[in-house]
Image (cartoon, rainbow, N blue to C red; front, side):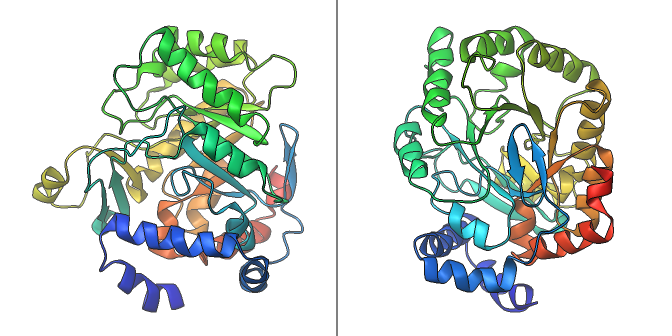
Length: 349
């Protein structure tokens, strides 16, 4: 209630990216202070007993994770642990540092309880970020999400080497690595969602090689079941440990936001409640295609305990939130945990 009645109205007076930067700055201060972490934990990090599970060699105290996109540079994992998250995914990180796209590049569309962003993979670069993350002493799993550097001149074999650099840099710091093949806001399309390109990428990364960290692949929400089957067949051949479903959308169909406002905003990835149903559908398809044999991380429009339950009922073993935090605040995490306990989550999984 404090967030919705006091903090949110103040944040929503700021531009979306300014509010995001303020949230990151606050979380980074908590991240640097064991005292603040302890204080925050008192309010948010409640007992996770009954929610723990082990997947691809990682033990998750609860299934609620912070989605990639909130913390691209690895500045807040300890703060997120204090807030009660069961795991954190940092990134996307890229081989080369990037300032991203020109501002403004992040927009709220409150009528749809959603966001549109074309940040352009702004980050400090894989080397700096992974060095930062290696110093952490977190007790929850850390995922690192990797993507190709946002530069259209990096293509072909150079693009493969670009991914490989980040993948190898992430190995010592990560508990698992997510390969983001579906970032729609770089201006370069979905290159690695082409089956041939995905096969070349996984051949280069070689996730089955000795001592590789568990490797997940993240899909777009804008995909049909036939296309998904083709990609999963390739992923299975290379020993991918699980799937993240889904990334943001380029589709604007069915939005409540005025068309004129959407035209003013322009292109970018749509996240939040607007993609909730379709992301759940993709989870169902992955669960069916893999016959429930591979862990799925469900993400896309989780802004309530009920939305979280739908993702789990569709086949997700873990879930991630980001846009839901913008609209509902950090209290969403304990709310979802309470609902999962009531729904006897461990019996389902």
